[in-house]
Figure (cartoon, helix red, strand yellow):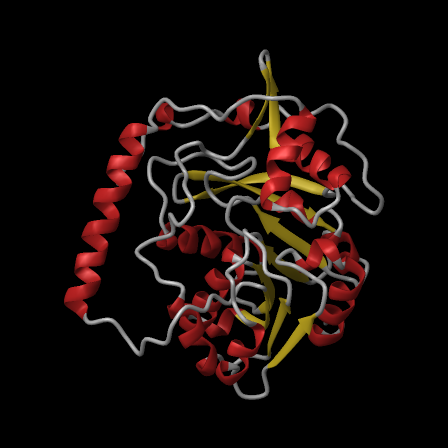
Length: 322
């Protein structure tokens, strides 16, 4: 669907963040930030590390943004990589769109890949929705990947071998109708304002295992301040489960055929923002020579709870940049 720029939030509004980010040990502001045109939509890209180093891509989860990697990304950059992440459409500093879909996120990812490393494969790391998104892309275009790391982004519900074409058609029609109804009802919606601590508290209900100081930082890098308080930058028209037409089981079924080295990292503790995947359910679906690290006493945000451990595992797996 064609979009009119006047219907989107302006970039000036998007980048109205705190003059001073709430400090957290080891967290680093990206070394470079810029906007990239992705088929007419402005996507915000953030980079850590040497601009001339070999690229490594990080993909965030749903209702997150690239700055959630402010601790994890610098640890990977210390391994000699140019670490690149972007805010998915409607998240963080990227523009808002009229409608959102899994396929639109895939097109945006390809625009970033082509910009960062045209014609050359690179290691890719995805968390949650980002991990599921990259699993699908790796299955469709494996030549873009040297390695794939999926951090708690392997949904599991039930095994389905496939969905008939007529059922897929019904799903598309249902998803589009549902999105149009939802978009109509949220056309003028705004996210509820509050203080930094109030927004951090709200986020803490979904991220109960994360330190409150870290949640405060997320507000100051993932929110904007207006006259009546702070609001999250995420598009208020977005909703949980709005990735369709897509089913979580499809990600699991793609794993066995992946040809590149694959590493899954799963937390054993279940929490609201996770997929509810029992780690042992993933093991039978791993690709040939694939690995899965299961971390005890760790929840969905494995890279935030245990950044030193997870970054060490990842750097060991992908090796030194060439």
